[in-house]
Amino acid sequence: ADPTKRYQAARRARLLLDASRESVAEVVGARPEEVTFCASGTEAAHLAVLGTLAGRTRAGDVFVHSAVEHSAVLQAALWHADAGGTATASPVDGGGRVDLDAFSELVGRSRVAAAAVMSVNHEVGTRQPLDDVSAVCRAAGVPLVVDAAQSLGRETVPDGYAVLSASAHKWGGPVGVGVLVV
Image: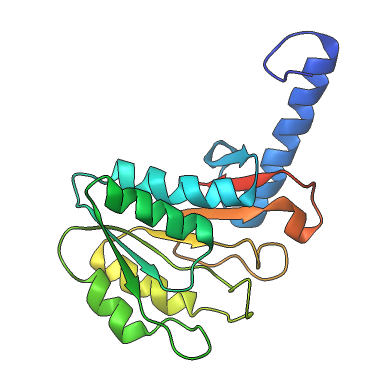
């Protein structure tokens, strides 16, 4: 049923869609209109990066990300670089935890349009220090993109994000539903 139409099944689908959006918005501390559903968490993460960079062209063309981001974020970084921007990977330690000093130095440079750090690494389970990362980004005036696919629904939603992506099936929701919060 197409939730944009007026027949009975479509209206019912619209009610379910709106209720789902309101539920997710409540969990992440956003307004329902700030929540968009996508085809997957991968698509949501990819769109989070590309959309943020596209909206920040006046601020700059540099994208800073941790070296251990999801492939969707790394592919978005490559697309950005192919389009003439700059993508810089911030180093991590042996456990995959972002090096805050290096990250701070990179984000503090001129022309940084956005930064991305995932909440929890999907391969090794490392929790990133998002409170510290978001403080660095806030001080530099750089929006933080957070891939929260591994933590949303299990941990407190990180503060300080500008854009958040997640995957519904990671917390028991349906497969094929990504969440993008702007």
